[in-house]
Length: 538
Ligand code: MSP
Image 1 (cartoon, rainbow, N blue to C red):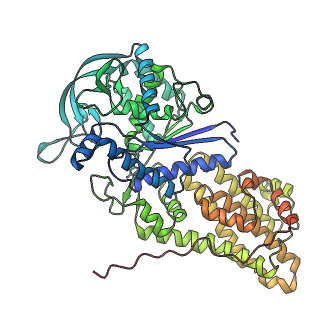
Image 2 (cartoon, rainbow, N blue to C red):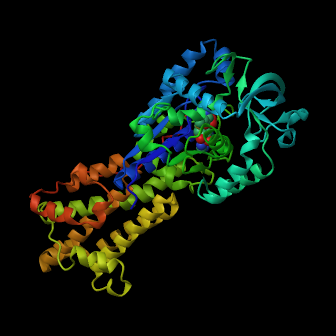
Image 3 (cartoon, protein in one colour):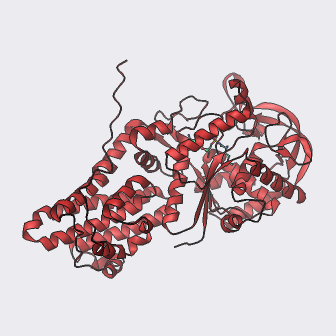
């Protein structure tokens, strides 16, 4: 199990509108990873924030008749409120209008300049205000009425300006070497292939400054220029650790373990960012993961400009934060695009959370509360060492129904952990659900309530097995649905400090629970059944 510090970041969002469900998806995914790594015993730093400079912000503020700084503050607060409402456990919410961020951006600029990689020239090209990016003629497509469009489908205009340039072409070979030597630098594989093809196609030097507006970080020594918004935006990952100072956080958490971003901005993170860092003499992040897009049910791409934006906080309030988080991560195969609808949230969460896991928890804890007067049941017949050994030994596992069940669940927990660590959430969820289903069948097959009169020891043993598996399932799901799992672990009587993945392998917690003299109270459901809101009479 890795024990080194873990630094995870999300993209920083443009606060030119309110957050939508796509932003929520990324924040929740990153949060689940951060929580998982903490539960593996790693020291985690988790950063998110807002990307407040650039022409798009200036234009939106103008359209709304407000000061750009006021727009940035108001909307940035909304993004932070969304993270708080969704239980996103960030350590730092980085705003790019923070003076410390300006200092970091100037420092990285100066480091790139000192390497001889920045020069002043004239820039002409197809510029998309919406993407804040220049495109090459060959990348453009034609829209309605012959209008030229970027590969993202946004309008482009021919633009001429004096600009600082970065010698990106110089980094073509080092970047290709990086992708070859570190095959995991870009994930998933399909995005990696796109990036490699793009770089193999040849890199042109990159325009790094703008003179047409002044909302940004001023270029040192060129007061008419502000940095291209992506230069300062990418630098946010360093700002939050205290760069350019040699802080303890820089020493501990840089290079970043994982930049989690959407597939539309992989090029910025996997081409420009490592090139800037190489130029500035700073170590490269270990991995860039480009997740897919979340699409509204009709398959339409959801964006602020398309108008089909849904407030993620309203959805979380309607269905519960944990259910909403579970749905988003469970429904979409991580790395691919996925669709969502309220019907799908209700169907998925009712089937898997309310009826399966929630029901299991309710059944087990109720049986302990009513049949044993709440006393923790004594485990018989299978020691901790047996369980561990048998989990690796197929022949031994079906010694008894209970033994097989406990060993299967331990094996599933190992598979879950391995799949989660490699961000293969579909496999992780399947392993988890299999145990939930098995545990429910185990209750049906053993019918512990019938054993009360005939074989109370066996009943206690069955309930002990179920308590152990319930604990393991709650630990496994905790990064995804933290509040509900904590309620369940509270009900079982597990102290906060013991809620980690290690406790699945090391069942000493059960002995401690037995000797603690604690009682299981009559439980209340952890995942209530969800319902769609009633149709509007109109
Ligand atoms: N400001 C830049 C990122 C700079 S990072 C140094 C940006 N901002 S954004 O607000 O447009 O997007 C923020 C993140 O949300 C990006 O990773 C983007 O891919 C992601 N998503 C935006 N819409 C999305 C969906 N519909 N679905 C999933 N993620 C989406 O890009």
